[in-house]
Image (cartoon, rainbow over all chains, first blue to last red; front, top):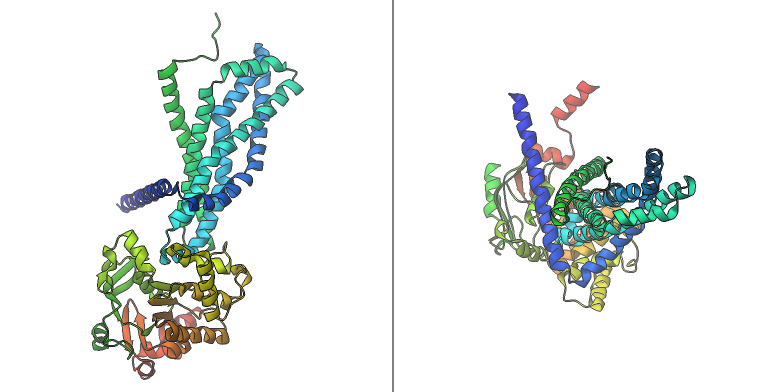
Length: 275
Length: 275
């Protein structure tokens, strides 16, 4: 009986926190729409662009490079054995653009920026700086969350673009320079198989990831418990929640966008069956 | 003592403002955090231009009372009124405007780390809007001069000593010439000399801006120096309401122990058992 009560209490707590998160997200969206034409918002976003963009770019590019290298290394032998090595670019670049680029850029953003945002806002929370803002008639969601959310939302696709770019170059380096695949067919087949739609799918995903990371990081900072331990725990929870959300959103978007593509353009096979 | 507490709700404690209409009223306020019941039916009436000091042991809920007054916390039961109007019935905009009438000195200062001293003190002025940059600079200089710190405008909070941080936070709290100033543990963490500087500032501000003051403290020297009226909070209720002379003569063992700084027999017994 006690077990049932404990499970019930935990479920209620979870639902309550989930509800609070959506109220927080709704308030952020409402204030974002209201403040978009205001110069003050853009003045407040500029330092966040620097924090989110400039400081994350190197790790994102390093991530993209290794993803490209590993994809090329792992796919070469199998494709070579089947006589498809000239089509290696399709596998490497399509995987990067549609899936691994946005997901891994999102994960790096969650780790590098999400953790820092939660720590910053969490520290402001436990040192009563958020309360101080409220007491002075200011809305901390408007001045702290909206600029950070907007920076994550707008810069995630840009960071994903750099991740894809470096990954594509690294894949080409392995395939063409190391393994001797001819460069021209490598790019020809890549261009033939990769559509604008595929690039768009990657960017839609990255926008979703960026916005979700920003919201979760700010929410966790705003609701962390007192003390250094509370802030530390909030940072960990923020990363874990953002990581799971990235994977869940990825699955949801992959399924729905694939369905939409098939409905609009029909199924397009990348591999032609033999016989 | 019960009679004395009941009197507190109908009798203004000090001499100043005794006949004026109340500025703040707390009526039968209850507040719990999880299973911890902090306030158990608090009644409080504050009159204009009085400095009321709330004393009590650490963790007894003194700061919780302050946060109810500015609407940072909502009572589980009961009501908080500002000039006869229930704060609980106000919408977000009204609450933000209401808070412009309050200055709040937080325990740790709650200065914004990322802003300079001038930007911190000018923050409520910017939030209020309708002021030119020159006017904001003038008010910032005036308020810093009032707390004896003119000339440090360009410094960051991290560059200041504990006492200086409190004084800058006080300058920020009075930036809008508030009707009511709330001081949350203003002398905690300061040496006796710095603490006395803060006490003198509280008295000076009362003289110069004629504000109603509410001071939460466990520092009896500070309480005796600045109070028109002292209230003692114990186990979720006020158990004393009177002047500093009256509290010095109080016979209640709980009050005597607090003002003389003596541990209870129960605490001493537990210490003996541990050793």
